[in-house]
Image 1 (cartoon, rainbow, N blue to C red):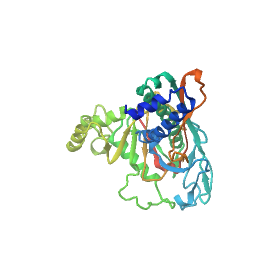
Image 2: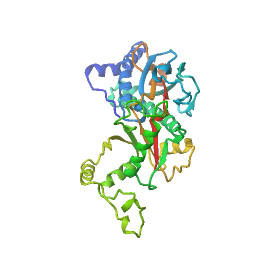
Image 3: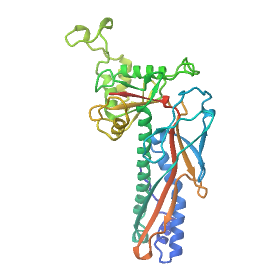
Image 4: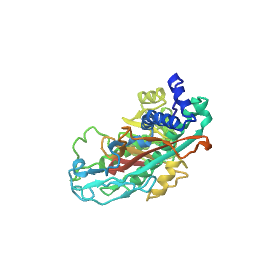
Amino acid sequence: MKISLKRTPEQVELIKAMASRNRQVAYEAQVALAEFIGPVLAEVINNAPTLSNLFTQLQFNADDNPSIPLDLYYDISDEDYITVYSQSAAGGLPQNQVLPTVSEMKIATYTLDSALSFDRRYAAKSRMDVVSKTFTRMAQEILLKQERTSANLLMGALGNATTNGLTHVIDATTAGTFLLNDFNNLITRARRINTSFSKGTPEGAAGSNGITDLIISPEIEASLRAMAYNPINTKGAGGAALGGSDYRSNGITAPDAMRMAIYNSAGLPEFYGVSLMVINEFGDGQKYNTIFDTLYTGSFDGATQEIAVGLDRTRESLIRATAIDADSGSEFSLIADDQYSIRQNKIGYFGSLEEGRLVLDNRALLGVIV
């Protein structure tokens, strides 16, 4: 992530004006820069390839009290047909609130903010790099807070999810290795979970895998690449179990066309028709793995095991409600910080956004423990 200000004559003069000894001129220049850069920061944050951007955006006016009419999203009023998770504070634990689907569900929102400053002399010398780095750091701080909040919500909703008597999290066939069999089992579990209100086949289920995206660690991506040269079978001849001293345990490789496709596309944008999203925070001992370890109700060791998260994005399940500022029309509000006096020789900015995240239907989340 990088924000750069071009060194044009207009922008150079604007930056210099921020360091003017005339307090009114300096403040007006700071406000003008905030109005210009605020929407840019919002665009940068929203386009980052992260967990937080898996959520569908729902905009509302600032100072409003957002809500969702559940009966417009789900026309079934059976008990436990859908399970909704939300957070009442940034980074807080996800909570499940019991509500009838014929009512309006209020969205709990919170504010994510950041405040930064730099020495006035950098503005006087037109140091565009310092000003650019300041706003880059602000965008990074907001993004980190959004990521942690999103991870808490997703891992909490997944760790407690149970549908039709089945947990949404399954174990890998072989500990520490992700195989084709695990992909197959995950798709099967998704189909068993995604049923209609009568526990039958839902409308539009034909041709659907039940998951569209798989969020994995670099190590699991390596397991998928290894299928180009490692055996993939989990059973021997005649369906017999594999045995170390048995001739039937001889490894069977993937078809040549499949191995060649994996070999030629080391980046692996998708597998089995499922898009892959590789995130460094996933993996043994990593940040999001630790969050899942804390919130999961089953057996899991975050130091030696890792979670891969499957997501069905065809469902309108992950919702992110964001407040739109009435003055700027942007979801990110950036204002000049007026707390500094002339003697402090500092120029500061304060940025914030109001949002609320929720999982409308946890059937869109599945996981594999590897």
